[in-house]
Structure formats: structure tokens, C-alpha cells
Length: 120
Image (tube, rainbow, N blue to C red; front, top):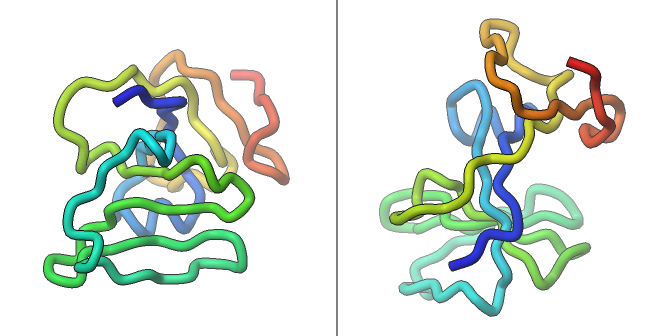
């Protein structure tokens, strides 16, 4: 499984979803991902573009899909067994939890879009 990217997201939705200071996501090619038990998944429409897919038995968030990028799925890093690349950056840093301090050398992005480069 080759991740297209691995990021830390600090937006409010990701923080609420993970219950932590941020969520770490793997962007994977849809065709490279094989999901077992698809019939056990429920879908929550986050917005007109984004849907989240959860296991109806245990509640695990299995993946997110964005209609603007139909060839890619976002998978929470915590559910992936095996190695994957180190995260490349922090996004939506302006939305970060007030009680958390970033203390690594990864690039930081924020601003109105959440993806504008910030000087660290």
C-alpha cells in the first residue's frame, strides 16, 4: 500500500473525530485499497463534498471520501497495520487545540484555506 501523502490535520472536525490534538491521515489511491466488510459500513455526509464511512458494529472510522477527488480515500493512520511514510506537514494549524504545542520540524500550513504556508 503506497500512501500518496501522510499529514496531520488540526481542523475542528478532525480534532472532534479523533478526540485528540489532531488527526493523522493517509491519502491512498482508491483502486489500491481493499476494504473488507463494506456491507458493515455506514455513511455520514459531513458536507456536500465529504462523506465518512464507519463500521456499524464497532464505530471505527474506516475512511473518508471527497467527491472533488474521487480517486483518493483518506484513511485514519491509526487503523493501518504496517509501515507507512512519516507525515509530511501540519495543516489547519490556525485551528489547532489551544492546549497543544507543535514541537517538530514539519512544515506548517494554515490561513483561510488551511493549506497556506506559514513561517515557523
